[in-house]
Length: 430
Figure 1 (cartoon, rainbow, N blue to C red):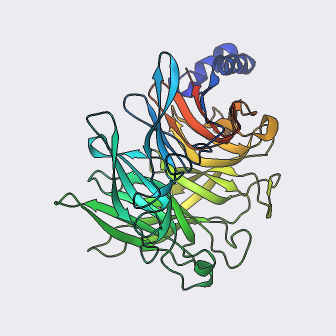
Figure 2: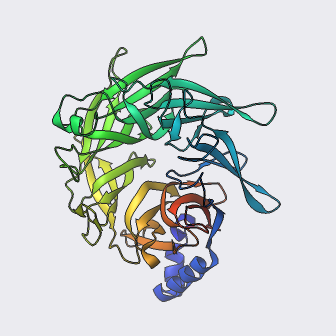
Figure 3: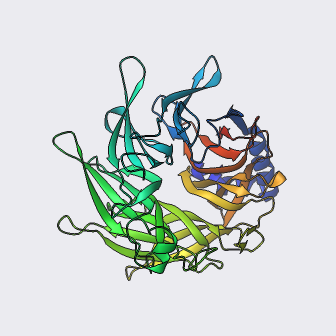
């Protein structure tokens, strides 16, 4: 919650004092709660790996990588009926030409259609971009817009899909394409960023915007976002030259359209060092002044660890444009890995002048937390933990979060819930 959003901070400090303000904040936090909307079943489809997409009618859409008629994954809907949240499979992948193993939360496009990506299946086995269209009988019909070949167009889609105002669709592939360098050979290709543009004949034109080299531009692009200036920003991992963690801690990149139909210009916005500036970044969001905000899953304080050794507990960061055309990174909050959480996942969303996100670990039972960070009266960024996941309510929440205009936040957890196979949750801010 941000009292600053309502212009309350200075009057309350003057009249009540700091201790009274802290009591007010504590009472507000007690009035808010996390609710498990749905616990996924003990048998597939279950184990969500992505977040949720909010529809205009208040229902939520997501994907599960397994289960369904062929065990190839499903697209599902959560909706309210008789005061309770209900689960409905709206499409079950057949595991052949229509794709399998859906990897991105679906996104709404023109005419109320849903768009998404699969990491496998399709005509060549390397994944698809698909569209689901509502029919008159209440069902959804699937169309494959593009099947990846695993060659110069990449494969094994991941990350997210976004639209621009002209109806063009953008996404990324973790692998495929360039396999000339050692880094790209070790990762089965370094991946691409691509565009799908609607044609006058109701088809889609595919174009590779950038092929990653495994050098300064990294590998495995994901987490795309569009800036107010219509430039693409995203995150990439550092290059692998062997086994274990990347030899470089990752970067934020920018793609800008150039004259003609060729590749877009790629520049490195910020390369992370793996220290207190972070490592393994997510994507970014923008504020009205052109500043960017995101999370780094590693770096910061080294209280957290992975199977490959210490990675740090992660942090929330800001990137500010400078007068010389570069960007300056500011670490807003470094996680300790205790009750405040650790290893932030899924980036952040902005609501009410506050940044909201989740962590995979930390908190009670080391099950992750739902948190916010805000710029306080003293101009320092501080964290509030709004919910710590303990098991029956889910474990290891992952982003990105979705929010509605009433201030409700929605997300999923990788495990936990009533059956230990993941859950969908809502947090009520008001």
